[in-house]
Image 1 (spheres, rainbow, N blue to C red):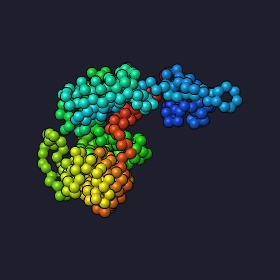
Image 2: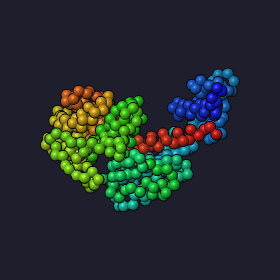
Image 3: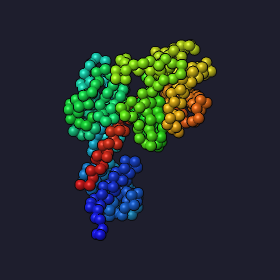
Image 4: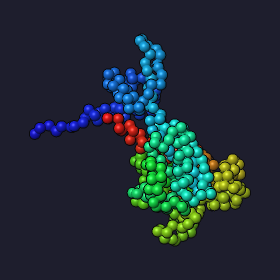
Length: 396
């Protein structure tokens, strides 16, 4: 039998080498041709051909010279920042924040707008996205992807929002409306899931392949990363931990097909959400306009605030423990405004309480991305996809 021929092998190798070089330039650039050759294991000739190929495609550019050594100075190369752009959007009930990043990941444009005086979601997103691109000094033709982080459920199959209790005007069909309006690929992502992506990329879960993120803020939420990938469930409802039945809390009954308006009213939400946190604070003499203000005051009050943190940790541990005895993750990240306000003191208490009531002993830490994690998660998600598209098209 004749040997099977593998067509296109040289082309595939070029593509793999090009991608490896581009990733190196993103992580460690600027670099010379010789340095790229050494790091990729390619010969000087092959490395030079690779750089010329990427330069012709506009993906890398010369950014200076490296002095030293015999002969002329070596040219330094870096990824061309403007070869593509992405936009991440964090949509909440009161404001929308949009940021534009170039392909290196640098944020080059950012806008923030109120959503209180409008009921037109397409118009809100359109204005924020277009203005973010303008702030970046580019236009929509360079924007390869827009990722919007929203509260509520995102259908894993269709990518549509199926339920967003904080955004009553957001509905099925909106995704197609936005794509038509912007003439750009647009994708939705659950806000807590995107926060987990940010933590995995640059935060407390950096490098972790298995962890859970518990969001404690105005609402409560959960993101699970298993084997390096987000677990969203069949309908996108994985992580709606507010509905978790817990001991000592009323378990309301309702139709799953008709979620309650005005937010989650599940058992865990009732004992660990913002209203519950404020109630705990009042019991021990701590008040604030926001739940995070109450916990921040308690955490900063030393011994006087310990009872607040103890009680909150005991309640949070019920949700964390229920999750961890099913998934058994090595790491739990506490995120959201309340978690950040409680800091390591709250995380340590939750860790001890979980170990005391279950057989699992995960490490519990506070989120490392303390500013706009949903926005950063949206940008990371968009960049990963666009780099695959742009860097994967270098075989031509």
